[in-house]
Amino acid sequence: MIGIVSNCLFALNAQAANHFVRQGATGSANGNDWTNAYTSLPATLVRGDTYYIGAGSYSGRDFNTAASGTTVITIKKAIESDHGTNTGWQSSYGTGQAIFAGSGVSFSSNYWVFDGTVGSGSNPNAYGFYFTPPNSGSSIRPVVYNGSYVQIRHAAVTCPGPSNDIQQFGFSGTGNSVTTDYTYVNNCQVSYWNQGSNNVISNSYLGTYWSSTANHGVHVEQIDNPSFFNNIVTSCDIQCIEPGGGSTTNISNGKYYNNVFVNVKGSNGVLKGVSSGAIKDTVIYGNTFINVAGPILYQNNAGLGSGSGNVIVNNVLYNSPTLYEQAGGGAISHSYNAFFSSGTISETGVQIGSGDPFVSYATGDYRLKAATQSGLALPSPYNLDINGDARGANGVWDRGAYELAGGSLQIQPPLNLLVTFTP
Image (cartoon, rainbow, N blue to C red; front, side, top):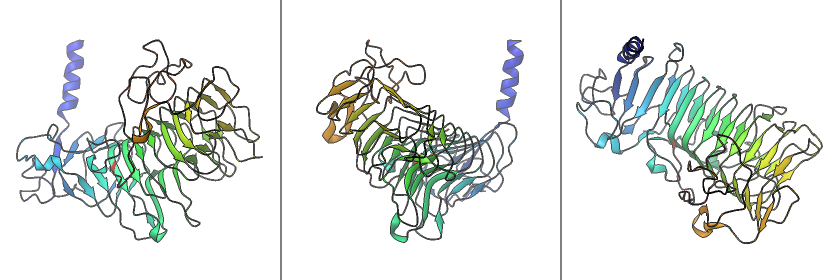
């Protein structure tokens, strides 16, 4: 029986093929190797196959190949250690970025992997895929996912900013079960406009966004069952995350954990209900909040009262005096939070301290320099910190995004931000 299964798997794998895309290729353009690479992605792509892209500048397009069950099409930035074939390969094809400087990409059908292969953190030049849309037209949307089951990784987006005051959504779409992992976005009106269910934003770097009277700005809009974890959010004004999709749409069953939020201005805080939309049945676990002027959770607009079922546990607050604003909604459960230079609160397991608890606040190294009081032990996935270190392994479940002695993640001022995709 084992032999039969193995042979079946081999047959399925044998059907898949690699294809190659390289700007300036002068061969037969059949995509069979790097000498004969396509100069742009072909109009028709094959389910189950992988398309490697070399460094260069490329035009955007809509990916709409019909789904075939759950079989994905993978579009991947070639690098020295992963480029599909050595025939015709040169190292320069892997060291540069694949840049989409004009129109962006969109996914209109289901099951895609769009992977820049490399890039994380605050250096936009490190990402395999880079989007730099022009400041023209009525709307700028560099990466759109209206299909479902789309994975976007190691991709960076830099929007042109507010000078022409036109709609600018970095990553956006209505698809369900979309993952944006190791992405980088800066200077857009909305960084992520996610209108589908079960979507994930993880391991990403969010720089700044802008807002105007004509175009309301925010870092993230989400709805049902979102997950937001292991992210660095460097600036918000007025709130960071809110419900999207209409005035009565809620964020429900959200999971926000292992994130660092730095410099949140205004009275609305980090996670806020808007209009008649509310935050419901959402957990906020093990995050670090630094210089947050408003509440960590503002569950609904005052007097509308529809937020409920929310839980705030194991967070570290520095110079961030307000944990929550109930605003007439249901009671918010909170415990085991640590407040440093942030006032006090009555809750089970509260820790009150003074000064900053970080290895190097001045340089943006927000690891803990000493253990916190032990927090509340939680199940997977909350048992790992932002770096993947096991919480409580030394007998103390540290609060905040970092378990003591985890690796550093340097927060740097955003300059140009890139968007990258990884499977």
